[in-house]
Image (cartoon, rainbow, N blue to C red):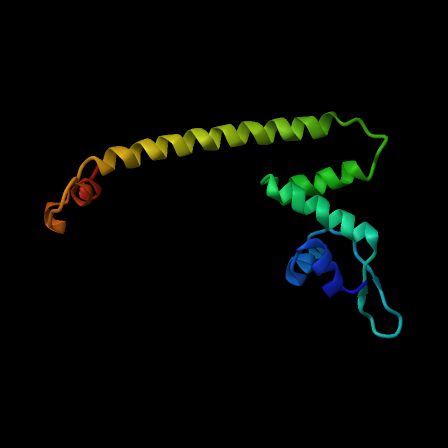
Length: 132
């Protein structure tokens, strides 16, 4: 199948497919003898769907590349896969903590101004102007 067909089947854009090829995430396709078009097969569909599922979990491209390597070595120990996910979960927990702190700061800032005031009287703008 050609790149456009692969894009439709997987929900990836043509540009994304080319990006994944260039980055070594998607295996290179064969080329047509007479027209040099990229020719994809079911293996490419499966790889792209795997990548899309990983991306939906916010797994980085480097991590996906490693997961694909391990996926293509079915006899390998999967401890590295578990470790990779544990690291990802840890990073996500740290990010959630940072977001919670940011939310608290914004809520505290929001309390600086209530009701209708001029911009000059706005407690939020005053607080943002305060040098710390």
